[in-house]
Length: 521
Image 1 (cartoon, rainbow, N blue to C red):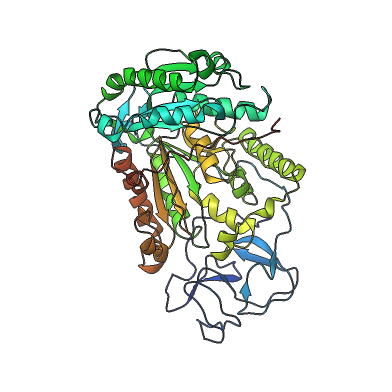
Image 2 (image 1 turned 90 degrees about the vertical axis):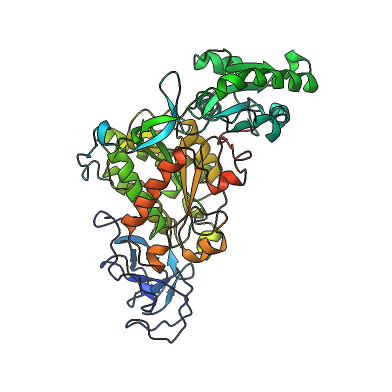
């Protein structure tokens, strides 16, 4: 992991130019990234590849000996596993992960963030709730407390057909939020607390106008305990019921449909109004990453995050296993030592958690990541943290915990995208921006998901799913700042009601995945 100095926003030591053939991200790097498929023996800007090197993969710029540090982004991404000649393809066959050193500096790169006064902030057309919260969408949620009520909540939501909902144009839909846990678990501890935080977070989310909580009745995750623990107030827009008490499946579906119908008029009675960008909370995510993620889409998203923070908003970075090996860059930006140490506590928890389950933190990158040119978790993580921009790290949160600080923050979560975003949304994120290199088609309800392609080839192939092409940083000479501004402007339009491509496809009904920890009993 060790780095001699801090990562700065990417400035290309060699500007992207496909005629050149490769790009160097820092003058300290000893690898370049192929801009196109390179053929063994061709002359490429002073280096002759000794192997065929796929686009996005690494090219050795110098001779290296066994054990030498391999540098990208001016950071160590691994060590040479044997001697490597200039021009060689560097990947899983000759580059290895050797762990992290856990030597951290705290709060040495903090700065005073510039926050615009509200009168100068960017605005969007949001939905302001009676208690002051601001949403970007307007859903009614039918939420299961346990997998045993998953089919019931789905059948209740299915009753609200497009024809019926056309009479309520201000409601984005009735969504069933079903999951696969809630019983066969301890009624205390990390797994139980995770689930309760998620259910409460969704039940009071600004993008949800009304909630019907449905249980079986005998499960470990009792609705009454959730209501009591979080001091939830039942009322016209927060209703609860149990299958066993109501009298079975058919009766519960009928009763549930009736209760949701009672919410429709109130939920429809909203009007969008001008709200400052400070009311936006952005969930940051990357999935199906490739070597371009850390070069195009993620740093451009990081620039948009800096703009959002400048406008008083909040951005939530997550996926703890996918910042592993780059967490030292975040501790340096922690607003205080306590915040930095809270992040390290989560890193150490993950090492112990993975170890007791017989795994390794370097199980990442995934096969798809490796096909896209990512070799080690260090390389993947260094690209992933670029999503977080450059401002102070103002807070670190448990999974699904309510985010109560503005600016750039971190939430502990797995790297599995649906589970990670479920936690971020539970924490209050009312919009999602998701970068992808291989082509993830993820969508989210109740928070709209903007998809950003890292490379032009995939964007053109999957143009029905990708909202923004960050690949033009390489192919068209666009700057990170230009694409970052495009992301920020798109966020404001989406927050105002414009649909993402994933929304036009109806994605989001099956992506509610609370993170399960602990024994199933």
